[in-house]
Image (tube, rainbow, N blue to C red):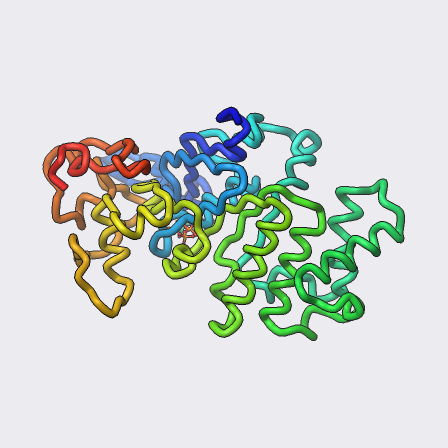
Length: 339
Ligand SMILES: Nc1ncnc2c1ncn2[C@@H]1O[C@H](COP(=O)(O)OP(=O)(O)OP(=O)(O)O)[C@@H](O)[C@H]1O
């Protein structure tokens, strides 16, 4: 199999800035006797490169605000990138017009965190599931659509006879199953799941996760799975990308990342997981807060909290380099053999 066939989604140099300055009047500042225009931005993602391999579940982890959801929404075309490119199955898609992007909209589906907000309360479940099928497969007959709805409801464990009910008649776990059914109804290849179980009761999180894994197996799906929950990653992920302040600082297959994390931030994240026998090497406790993404630190964005930072780290942005374990890490200390 060629590399082009293996890479389903390729994210290259992705950046997303949100403008914070409001209108022109809000942007004007009086400085040194002159009026200057001052625009503030949130630098939500700052040069993310990620390739998602067909058939894998690539988990993206990191603390709140590191840019995980912005990556998810930008890949799905819900936000336009400030810079960078998104390629799907070898074709650049971030610059396509509305019509040209439609076939990709069918292949790429999203599951959101909140199953309460993501289902239309005025539509029955049947209508909710029929809508995307009719949109993407207008050639299907009414009975074809009905069969498809019944099949997809069955596949997520919801009785097709409940199609006339509304979202509020279901529990949180059932609603998330319905959201998954809506994504699966158009036979996608690639699913971006943004914290799909974190709004659910702990007791049903595993069921929904298992449903997603079964769907991956039976339908050959590829996932980009956004989460802050490392236990979920360990269970679900083929590979893991760790983000800090809008950049990927480490990427590795799941077992390697958990057994021998290389980046000091990854080591600190994993140190935070409670374990019975805690004899892990490189146990790191982080001090200080994550800096604001409005004024990014120079050099490595992690340097202010890193026990290994030197002058180079304060000045030069580290790029991802290959590690012995087959992963990638963006860290001068690792590159220089100091860590
Ligand atoms: N529409 C927006 N306007 C301004 N800033 C935004 C917007 N959306 C996100 N941000 C900011 O961009 C940064 C990244 O946010 P994002 O939601 O992608 O992070 P996250 O890692 O998904 O966090 P969480 O786990 O809390 O959802 C944050 O500082 C956030 O406040």
